[in-house]
Amino acid sequence: MSGWLIDMQTVKPPADYGRIPRRLLDRWESIMGAITPGDGDFERFVEQSCRLDAAMRILPAPVVRVDGRLPDGVRYDVWTMPHYGPRPMRPRLDRLMMSSHADSYARFRELEPFYGRDTRLAACTNESVDNTVRDMLAAHPGEGCVVKLTYRPKYCPLAHVHPDGTFDHRDPMEPDSPMRRIPFDLWTWLGGAFGLEGEPDAILVQRKVRMRYEYRVHMVAGRAVCGAGCIERFTPLDNHGERFDPRMEETRGNGRIESHPFIAQLYADHAEQVHKAIAGHVTGHYTIDLYLGDDGRPHVLELNDGANSGLYALHMDPLLEAIRDNPRMFTPPRPAGRLSELMEVES
Image (cartoon, rainbow, N blue to C red; front, side):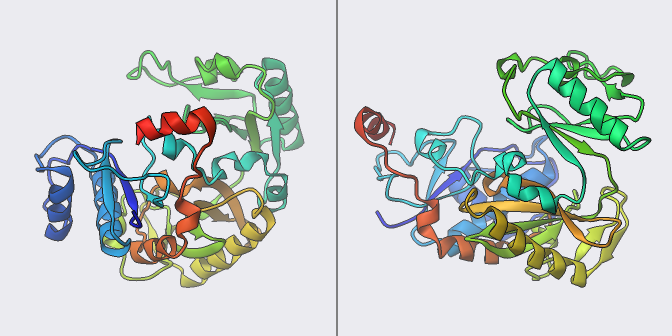
């Protein structure tokens, strides 16, 4: 089989999808089934629809696997097919073999000159984190710091530690309870992730700085192929045909949208310089989030695997064309031995 395997996840449609073009809805229904108005997130549904539509239009001979299941009665060799699509919470084994490795960015020493802020890694122990946070607050008095889990980065929200060592915390068992400002403590923030206890370099502590004009660049094969400002309410339906959409918010979420083509191009060029420094660590499709520092220069905020990264007002066609032109990067390695036999059963 020489076609592409597209992974899609079932998502709930929103209550009002009248703003979504009919061609996207028809495509969704032809693959995913009838659309029934529900309580789904509008932006998430649109993003999934745009991923599916672009893949079906641009990738050769696409075969869609919905929620990990291939079409009934048809057998494909998933080990010879390049893959595209979001990675589900419980991916099949062939998808587990694929990763851009971008989520491990905090441990790429080569990235440190690109951050534009003081960053330090700590082991997942009370002593290590307490000392690192205390040292960061002492080094930058009055500014505070941000604490992030480097393993499974979406497991818990960032901790914004105030200059006095406190942070705003809500009891995860009572999501409707008010925030309380309490002394920062690793396990209060991290909750039940005790399986990570003792892991080296598991916690990233960063100096808190002002981040202006946050922007996401999509990288494929070391090239910046397209990008968009990190504007939460935008989706690919808001793109006007520009590879690097120039619209941004100076402060994320403030609602004041500005157009800065020069900054967008600056970010695209800078992202390729970043890739040159970390090329030995990453592969395939990944994203680089950038911001403009008070020094007027672009800096790296974070890296993410491209499969599940938010799209914002992204021009999907350049992204899928770049993916199409690099099939080897998106084909999982065939395992050997007993594992190979298990994989054959899986497929």
